[in-house]
Length: 467
Ligand SMILES: Cc1cc2nc3c(=O)[nH]c(=O)nc-3n(C[C@H](O)[C@H](O)[C@H](O)COP(=O)(O)OP(=O)(O)OC[C@H]3O[C@@H](n4cnc5c(N)ncnc54)[C@H](O)[C@@H]3O)c2cc1C
Image 1 (cartoon, rainbow, N blue to C red):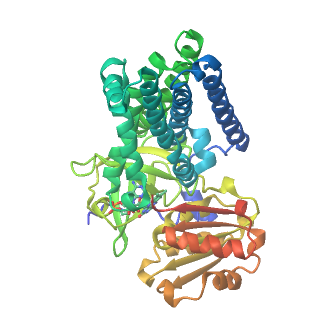
Image 2: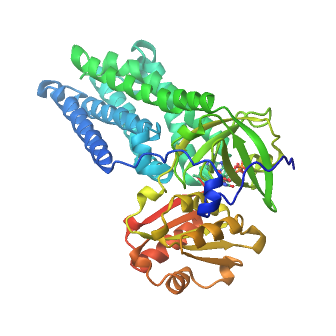
């Protein structure tokens, strides 16, 4: 464990007096604009309808009546819709800030997984129907037609490789398969989606009945693709790179908080201009020989106090364990801030925060962003007392907001049911917003208990510390 001079006062902002001694945090992240979400959904639906209309109007009744006409038509239509939905999938994960602020990490993953099976199934159907249709038209066998398509039609071979990559990505997304893979392998496999889409682009333009002889449609389609690629490039690469260069974060202290739990304090430039809210997280890339190639999500465990920024990490695997061995001076690159579990999500004045284990990090920084009138009821749950990390800071922040802190220690099985716990500790829970952070099983449990006590969905905000 590397220790350096304590440069970061953890009691900051807990009380007015200590807050005065500290530099004020930077601005909060901008509030989500809900209307943008509705506009985005409307645009995506209009786009889908337009693509279907385009596919239908490209066919003539004469072509449909020819041998293979119907199968080729179905193939074209499923191909167009599949490619369009694949683009929508890419837009969802492009981390476009206006969308990210509404969906957050969890919403983004939920939508991505919900939509996921569609583009792949439609594109597989496209390949099957087009092959059948072409075989019927040329009165040849399926395998003969497969050979003809791969060897004599422009760009079909590349598109087939693209489809194979998409199917591979689809298989690795099935929960049972995903759970057996390392997150880094899964992520690397998913990167092939960009190659798959690039390989498929040319054959659509060259062969699609909606595109051949329709220069305007070609231009519009190309612009949509270029815009999607541009969004990925800007928000996943350029912005994080520029932000990391601008703030030039370096580790200044590595502090042990509890057995297996470490805080890393980074120092950087212009942090007073870094718009981040309590409850948000960054993908952190520590630029050491061991860790530079992987970025992991960790919440800020305190609002930035320029020039300092803190994260607190529980060791559960390779990356989170290596964090405790970081040395002062290590450079740090960041991507984010991300996450929608912020004070902006509040629908009531009062709140209840429920943290499972290391989930307290996000709620600890969120607490700082909450006004005094929020009178927070904070429930910290941990398997043992020494895992109630940051408890002194949390206690002071709660006290300053005239709230109540409950510390619940013990294995989940040994404790009372979550519903009973919430009913007893938060009798006015239906008049509060509920924020939950921690492992997936606990979140499911707390969300279900709150819902059964009558807390509406819009007042429940959670961040899964998992993928
Ligand atoms: C939004 C968010 C905020 C988080 N904040 C914190 C925090 O403040 N403090 C903290 O200690 N932990 C936090 N985590 C969890 C942390 O990201 C994982 O514990 C860490 O990435 C594990 O990596 P590993 O290599 O040590 O372990 P591994 O053995 O690789 O992974 C162990 C488990 O961690 C999860 N995980 C691994 N990599 C990722 C990833 N890139 N994205 C999401 N989940 C992953 C998976 O569920 C996996 O099964 C957060 C996770 C998320 C999604």
